[in-house]
Image (cartoon, rainbow, N blue to C red):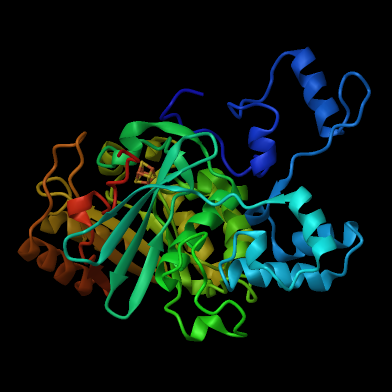
Length: 415
Ligand code: SF4
């Protein structure tokens, strides 16, 4: 599929580390018949010679706690070991069998054959001059790169994580959109980013000695990750299966235990994904990138609005909001002279009036491929005042990490 074409969403099987990489290094699905036969044989664990193929070890971070428990029971071990292993990984940040002394040697030997710890190595870590933001350039198993950001605000820390390498949506002001789409991330690759930030907060990077590995409640002694926003590289609802699976893992109460409303999923307006979230009863904090209050203005900034028009998007948002009894956060990138006039603000007010909504105003962050200018403070305040006339609460996003290209729309996975 060519870059920047919005493919259909929400109907793909969940990519896993093994399904994405085991049969085809490029992650492409074989198309000719002999390739497909070969793929089917491999799925059944049989080589063309008739000998059994041992399946590749699974990435631990691709598994929910229940999936791990089932595997451990299949190996003929007590589920107690699964619970211990889970706690080591998510409560103590262990990613090495040597850091799990309570596991019996026989179990460890089997688990070692069946599981891998696919942590994402840091190629580059950059820190903002104000000290509030760190950006990590992480390397995937296929040597592609993604970016993850740790942001400190007053009273909270947030991890901004990626759901794809690149993005197919092509929003004109976004560095990720400008680079095109490479591939979906697996659930494990999404989870590993959150774990990386959690580890950074605890002060123990992967492989570093843990502070007090056997304490029953390490979270009470260390700063820990409590907020995750899926606002990094990629459109999360274009990678629906892997993203919701990762969210299940991140929320597990015996693992990272992120609260329901502490995970924000930001979409450019992928309508089938929004409806599916509502129909599956998936309670998250939903953010929708609006940027234009008429179909024409929106298409100019968000080309996929041609596929998913504004009127249909509003209907999908109302459906989600009513079904999930949840407020929707609308994001509005403020671009001087483009969408920041009082008329624009009135148009937003009329569009969203009566919805349970909040508008997050984000002064444009610079990118190499777009020449727009951010709206100044006075115009942003005026915009807010007009929204208030329509009963719409709003915030102006605190700017974080602009000097290290870690702000909204700036992630491009370049060194
Ligand atoms: S803003 Fe989001 S959806 Fe749009 S191109 Fe960038 S990463 Fe993709």
